Image 1 (cartoon, rainbow, N blue to C red):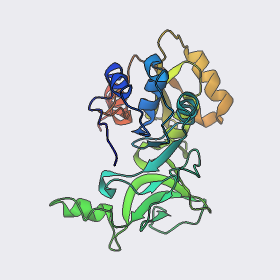
Image 2: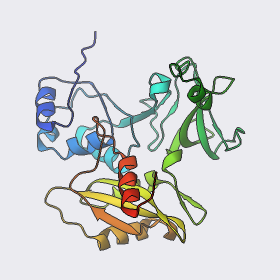
Image 3: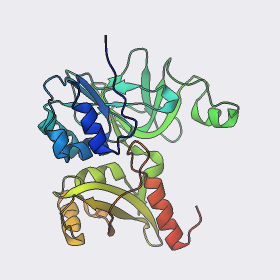
Image 4: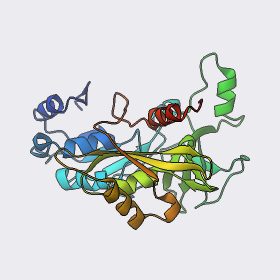
Length: 287
């Protein structure tokens, strides 16, 4: 049989590492911010990973820098999956022997996926659209909220996830970003996940987030928030130079703000919404 270890407060890294040190764990489930924090913890790096066979990631986008660092520290590749509360809770996952970096894998058994345009038309392989899911794990609906249910699930049982995705010809799916988080600059779509993935590769960056800020001329501009690793000092010029070297011009942020911490959920998922709300409040813009 299996033995599960539940870490009730993953923010308390010393306590978590102490608990993990008692076991030769064979599987680990986490998310991007937790992988980053653990790999920067000396106690964790000194644990015995000889039994670790599977690492699963979900909850937020897995950044390539975090996945590569985890593999370097533990010797185990991260398998990214995807799910929602409304899909109870998994819909796709990378097969452990055939992991594609940057992909959420393929649909689990009895599950169908497609992407649609704004008019609801199904798109072809390689085209970008909203990910929809159909399967036995999809909820029946929201309790006593029929209108909200109808907005989420169509008459054929397809659930609209609110995530922008691409389905490749080989069946693997890549999440581009949350539909609501997309930044629109002079008619160009910019996705925060791409910006954050690039920024995370800058040496010294511990955490980062990108949001759109209202702008009269271009509609929105990009602002990034950066948390530096302990003992590291970063400058706006370093951040901007790194982004310019790795992104096309309109994707380069206009503004950079350094912080000690970023707002997160209890499990460490960065809350872009709170950062956006703060900026809107500064500008006197009503949500």
